[in-house]
Image 1 (tube, protein in one colour):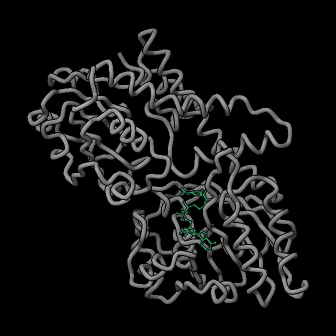
Image 2 (cartoon, helix red, strand yellow; image 1 turned 90 degrees about the vertical axis):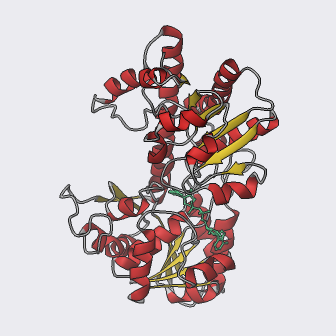
Image 3 (cartoon, rainbow, N blue to C red; image 1 turned 60 degrees about the horizontal axis):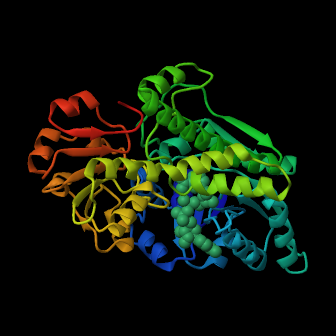
Length: 449
Ligand SMILES: NC(=O)c1ccc[n+]([C@@H]2O[C@H](COP(=O)([O-])OP(=O)(O)OC[C@H]3O[C@@H](n4cnc5c(N)ncnc54)[C@H](O)[C@@H]3O)[C@@H](O)[C@H]2O)c1
């Protein structure tokens, strides 16, 4: 099938590349011409494991192309995936101006009927507005549009694997015809008819994903409800962590035991600096806002959001207690990305940590395997080091902000030798407190004695 992807960010690129690898012909476009030029020169503008390989293969097979001419891309596909950003406004409401812009563009440029799919995360009832905008801006109704919702559940860092091996594919449609088109698009994924770069032909034998056909409103709600629930889980673990600190428990022991109950599950029960990224913080806000506008109080989400915001303050309480004065101190910040295996720093807790450290007059030395380039644009006065051991040289304290494997497996004997003071404040609970103490470190983490 011929598919158009509008918006070549994390979601658009992974969607486009994986659907091309699954045999479809994909036409990608983005408002950012530099991004399109980069893609046309064979470079990938984001860091995501395996994406490079999938794109190279699809390009060699002439299954994927990139253009900054939106009209050309819109006319080329029978089906259009909208993958543009939906950032939060000051009020927490989702800013849907990019979706609106794209809707008007599609209506103006299309010459044949299209199925227009919301892949971006949008609040419930966006589908209704999208349908209205497409009809209102089309040339006197000459071209017919249908709308579908197909929320994306991929996680940055494992996005290619998630797309090829999803837990579920949710499709909100308004007609049987729409459902049939969506089934055809995802058939190669469901039947595993693609070259999997992750497992190289040895994909796990677990049952194939289920394709769930729902109404458009349900599909939109499923995405916000899922992300908000996961965010809630993280904040819950963080409150348990605060309790542990006061009572003398160990949050790692508590959450592990809780998670072994299959009704609870171990994932997203990690205490620490809290959640960041381009999904949870904005999605929880948008869900609270949506509920508020229709008279439904979602106090538990408000509490989860408040708990998350307080994590940075909790971290700084620990920093002040251990370090006393921050001004004039050399601080190593290990980890800038909002989580491991991505270069994405949007709403990353580490950025808030760096901002506060600078405000308090610290000399910040930061290291991250992928996110230095993006962070430098925001904080040009931080000293950046590819090598984490260089960041530790002469440091009065090391702050762990992202759970990268390279930090988890750091040789602290070596790192500690060059530090001015053996002080580690771990925002991700990566290390065994006893071992750190045995190595002569003053070590503080979340929810552990
Ligand atoms: N990043 C994730 O892990 C993830 C996962 C699931 C869902 N989502 C959702 O998917 C959407 C996209 O997220 P992302 O992380 O890929 O964002 P992104 O910022 O990486 O990508 C968005 C892209 O859209 C382009 N764009 C913006 N306006 C445009 C326009 N009018 N026409 C053409 N292109 C335009 C931007 O230039 C950018 O390249 C969001 O709604 C997000 O909530 C993201």
